[in-house]
Length: 365
Ligand code: CP
Image (cartoon, rainbow, N blue to C red; front, side):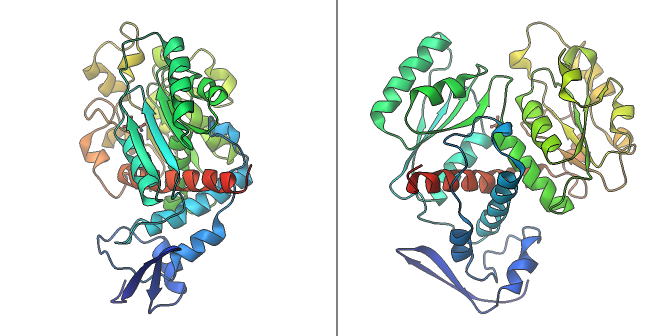
């Protein structure tokens, strides 16, 4: 990236960038790693964004299976633009001006809650992080009562994380706004799967159909695994499930993915090793003998990774347990680890979801 200058103009239509470079620079910048340099040479990304906006195909985003392949491609194309937009120093848009977004998190979160907040604010929404007493009341009553309260506040977008599988779906039936599932129990985490797919597209190219992906670890309790299996298979990827027998769901055989209980066998020759967190908060009793034992057999280190395909990449949705699920030297190696890229993709992907849901509202759908 050279020394091009830009002028940021904030007006009714949002931020516009006048560059002294023409649009080929956009294509050039498209795949560039983050340089930390605030000035870019991109043409008017904002106008490009506006032309790419489309109404979200459904009133809510509850499951990775909600979207068919053309919708996924369109959403990720849009997210790609938001990702480049997010690398500029001026990051404000007005696509959600006047809209209210409520983050309703009944479980802890750093990445998901933070990225939805940043995404909403960058799009001009009023963002409210609602404090929820997670352990005080019974699940069903809480949700129904909460839904009634939220309806009265008239939000436009409700991002919900809850420990109960099906909670987001239940809320969507009770409120009049768009509901986005930010993780419900061990059921689904659709925006995580979409941001993982965006990360893979940027690492390997837009056609991911030839990739083989091994999802490894605590699959039993993982909503990330369930959403990723559905989405990656829909995109044509080969998906493998790898984990100790105690952490493989009994219904895994019905997911259409080969199951491996030997880590080295399971990751042999794959393009992507997707590690999962041990979901201790969802475990009743001991599913693994000890974390030391777990790391020995199931933790990703250089020796095991050497069995994957040359140039294989490593992912982890976070938060990571270093030395349990993954060795630090792998997690922190920019040559193999996509973990930071996943976080950056999370903001962009969530901007694309929010903007297209708002576009659907503007269209009166
Ligand atoms: N990946 C993920 O959902 O992380 P958080 O729990 O920090 O949101």
